[in-house]
Image (cartoon, rainbow, N blue to C red; front, side, top):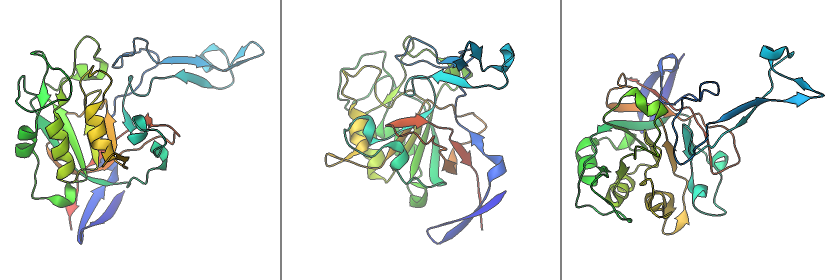
Length: 263
């Protein structure tokens, strides 16, 4: 299906049948998904009543699955300020556009930087810096400065089942987060389990930078634990986050990006 999108007095044509899926599937049978802090795999059981299991494979009349899932630490999800700030809007209360103008960039995390981070760092850390983002982002196209999608190199499929407890992920410097906000991005999509370091002492400093305006919760979102295939070239897209309607600080999501034609 083709849809027409009007943005800043310009028209774009999007074919919704040709989206690129950025989510990592949750396979409850193989449990091959990624892990972050969580040591257990997502669990799948079936509803049982009067010793009858509602599972087609075991002779039940239908499937009634019951799952146990760590939203933040087991797969693709989108979160909001309620993740770190009490009494702020829940993820399903945010009015997020169906098609968000976005920029996809690929970065090579650096092993050293003079830029600041709010917690101790070491030689094993890999940083995504403001200096790098300044070069990678098209700052002349303000219309698409709504969502920044960051793909990190190397970009192999191991990201889809990586144990990040054993292999720490790269993360952004504080200055990188301030820069992302400064140029107008309200949403971030990353292929990492967090925009903060694996253990920053529980401060979640980058989250606080992005989710607050003068100490007050805003309506920004962060989508983590994606996999961005190499078939998606760097550039501009429209993004549909497809967030589950959960009354929580975060919910599983299935982001798709769509290329477009100018009209």
